[in-house]
Every structure is written in C-alpha cells, then in structure tokens.
Length: 427
Image 1: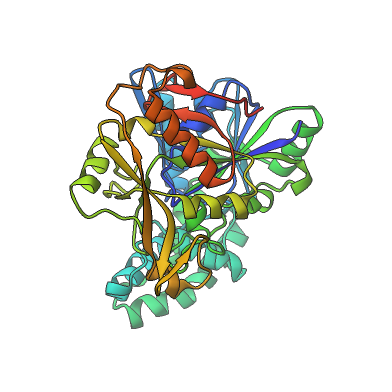
Image 2: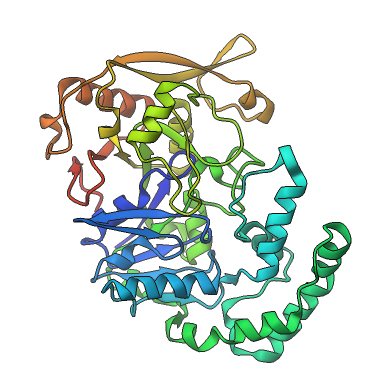
C-alpha cells in the first residue's frame, strides 16, 4: 500500500490535525517528517480538545503507530512533557516510535534563537524562539546532536563542549549574555536517555516493512507550503521542508512509495509571524475572521493575521507539492457574510499576475485582485453531505476547487471530529 502525504497548502495552521484525525481510523502509521515544537495541531474529540506541538496527530488514534521521523528536531523536555500530559488524560502513548537520527534542540539553540530575533529588531523573522532554526543550522553544519547521542556519554559530551566553545563566544562577546556551562547541558540531556530509550527505533526500516506488508502510512508535515525554506516566502519561512518532497527525506522513504498528496486548505487565509501577505485584512472583516475562527496559534499563542482566500497561493501549492486532493477546512467560519471576496490574481507594477511571482520583491508589492462570491447565512455545522450545504456555500467550494487546480475531497464544517463532509475517499 503506497503512502499518503498531508501538507499545509498555505502558511500553516490550516487544520492538518483535524485531517489526520479523520484518517486515523483508516491508516496504520502517522509520521511527522519535519519541524519541531514550533508547529501545533489542534484536534477536537467530543468535548475534549487536544493541542499537539511535537507529537504526530495520529497518537490520539488507538490503532495507529505514531512516528517521529529523522527530519524532525526534538526538544526532549517538551516531548516528555507532552507525553506525560496525554498519559494523564488517558491516552496510550506507548506505541510512539522515534528515529535515532532526529536532531535534538538544546538550551543553547533556544537562547541563540531568542537573542538573534531581538538583535534583528524590525528585520526579525518572527520565529517562535524555540531553537528550531539554530538546530537545523547545526544539522546542516554537521555539528548537531542526534537522539542516538544520548546513549553514548563520551560522544554527547564531546559534541556539546565543541558546540559551546563557539556559541558561548557569540553569546558573551556579541550578545552580552552569560556563557552556558557544558556540564549542565550534558547532565540534563543524559537524564533524558532512559526516558526516551523505549521509543527509539530504526524508523526507516519500520516504515519500509509496513509498506511491504500493505499497511497505510500517512506522512504529516508541520507548518505549510509558504513556510518551506526552499519554496516559501523566504526569509520569512521555517528552517525545513514542509512541502511533499520533504516527506521522503524526513521519513526515509522513496518517492515511488507515495501515492497521494493531500493539501489542507483553509476557506480563507491566515499566517503567523512576519512576511508578505497580499490578502491580509486590517479591518473589521479581519478581526471577525480572527474571532469567529479562533485564530490564535496553538504553539505560540499569538493572534494569526487573517485575510480572504488566495487562489494564487493555492495553485502554487498544487504545483510544488503535486497535490492530488484538497481538504477544505473552516468553511463554517464564513457563514454570515453577504459577499465573500476571493483573490484570483495579483496586480504588480500595473500587470495582472496569476501565478506566484518567483521574485521576492514582486511578491512583497503584490496587490490582490478580487472576485466576489455570494455568501450564506444558514448554519452548516450539521451538514453531512455536500448537497446539504446552502447553494451559495456549494458554489463557493466549487469556485475554490476550480481556481486551485485539484479536487476538494473533504470539507470541514466545524471543529469537531464528526463535523466533516467527505466527498471522495483519500484511501
């Protein structure tokens, strides 16, 4: 059975957790393949709300084996805290598997992340300050610490001492901060070893054997397409590849194993952090979307910037991810608007542009060109089929599907697990 990839088709926060949970009864493995605890998923089951930051959303489904792949960066303290929190709520987390090749976030990564952002001032990127970027930088520079290093004290000490030799110079001499003692970091991280050891696995081998055994593997990305370090709105991006291509390297499976790529698409647009956002609304409509949609970051707690749906971005996501399907979320939030604008193209220096400009400066200056679609006032949260939606809501969905370039196979009409309209099966 081939694998499926679930990827955010905007700037993240599209509702990937809800989509993963919807598929939980049909898949055997859910794999987080990139990012760290800078990405958050909210899953609502009955009257219970679960906020996941590092763990795969599939951990809430009892028949799923959740996997943290090699492409993820792990803050071990956050990981264990999140596991304990779920255990206290009666969730079995014993099936979790963690790649020994995943890299570890340390206290010096978090410190450098925060002081760098402050130093940048108005030019700051808007990171979460959780050390994700500096950890990926160390990974690329081949001076990172991996999960497997926790089990060899000599190697762990050598790596931490070598890293702090340079980083303490930067913290003290450039940022006027105190040096971080290597012994304290080593002692803390050795303390995590026995707690993490039961979850350690050769995850690439496990997933390969699962696929050969005709199991269904869902690869879950954090953030979204426009935050991809290669294909996003650079430099206002994350430090990894949330796009579908990143699933192969981040999980350790080949591209020929992937059969479908599902893009999660919010019925409007949001983003957290700095950077260009052509359809951003700084008026009453923007505030209404934020309030009705509960647009506050799961991990950061920051208010999300809100705007109308951007079909240019959706088409771009279809292209760079090779999307086969869309899951449209939060359609219910738009209930009550008489007219709903949709961005169909940009105006850049007097020119109409229908595809995402590759030039960063052009995108910064892009002005949205809108088409207006009629809204609806009926409550759609109880709709179970597409035909039960109001005619104007149906027309809105069909218009977005045509503009975006891939079929919309599911629609979220409320936050609950059962508040979803399934049009086509993903599996």
